[in-house]
Image (cartoon, rainbow, N blue to C red; front, side, top):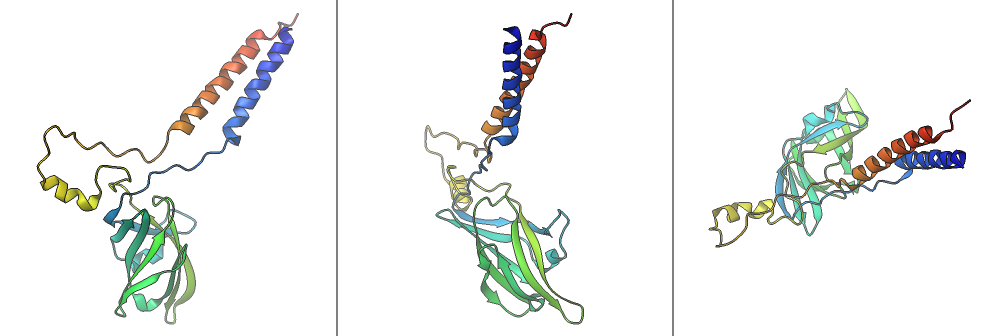
Length: 208
């Protein structure tokens, strides 16, 4: 009987351990509140965190506009005559203005804005360089208001100048961008598996 119970405990521990790797983990992130923001960014290489050579062709910061949850990024390209084309994940960017030396473009960003945005560009330097180059635009999302917060960045200056109403409460802090539930669940499963393994060893019949 003890041997069967010990086997059951060991099997349970194995299942708990495997579940740490099998259970799916959905990406959870907070969206950005409607408004207009200036966002710093850096162009990084497609396959590493190194700064891309393409970074020198983009002026900083970019302008992020969020309207009804739709995120539109606008940035300015320098040396525009050498960048023959530029595409974002949703396709070619829209040209806002172009004076030959600089070109302002815009495009929509879907999903989690804290994740790198892949961009493809055709760069041509006469007699030196002519190729299609892929880089990742990494935007600094720190300080951006999140959807559901009491005010967007666009309205914050007006609220700061306004006199608070009597009895009004201080604005709540922004909610965290991630959800700790999967971490807690995985921790419980890991602890459970360790406890089960220890119990299985203690209940194992002693050898004569």
